[in-house]
Image (cartoon, rainbow, N blue to C red; front, side):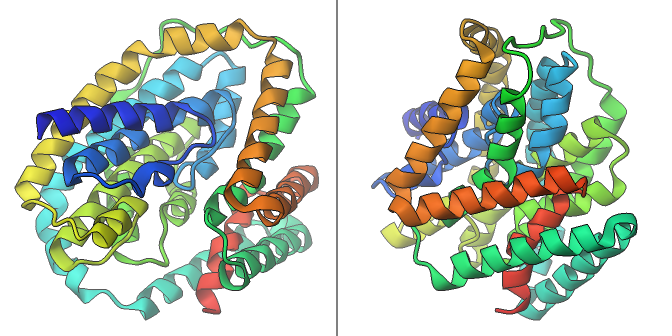
Length: 371
């Protein structure tokens, strides 16, 4: 068991630190519950590295790319990483007191509930952008059409990779290409305020819990809700990263309780017929893996930043874009590349129109509503 958890930690570190490589890419391999679980959980702790410094998102952290990137430009990149690691660990801890409530809610699942929630969220996006309503409607419509086409009419292996990398990743990296060719100096003594970190980690844990029950409420839609109550970039990021981790952990617990699959690791476990252990064992494993992931993540920023600084930042960003395009071709050929480039065009248009990036989340909302 311990050996498998450690191997999973190593694999999750690889997927978390490597831009464009999602844990689902390796989830299909034949393995034990503990290895796949540790790999998936570790990934949620460490995927902040490429999304923060290179602008390459996962589905659960897509909305956090731009706020994190702004803090990096202000020299606060190490603070972002500390927020990511601590809020993820807090999410693991806060899952425990919410378990009794979760065990009651998980059996009440109804697809209609998710659709109603998404409809209200979509209405909020339109009302909150009334000063630029026509532009917001345009972005919502374009994103929704793209999402419906990809998720309902195309049989892609990695649809979310193309959608989220295009909408949220490529535009940020292209913006970096237009700036200076040097990486901004980072504050070496990051300070984190604990009260808002704990408060927004609790909120993120609750949103992650809800998103693990309702397929309509993905981790990204939970992050969209977090924009409603977050005070600033730091509180928003604490919510985003805790949503990401709690969504994964609750998703595994959901699979253990009901057999429903709510993430790639649960799908892989279901396909292989692997039975999860008791919830108590899952939680103990999560605390162990999470604690090691925080220690590992705390030791990695110096060499990670050293590697980035050793390369011309503009050249590095151009290389990352090329790598992401090649990955898109590898996953789904020209169709995948078409989706990624279309998403990138919509994401870049969002920047140029000056509307909130959350409007791009219609890429998931519209397909859910008209399913």
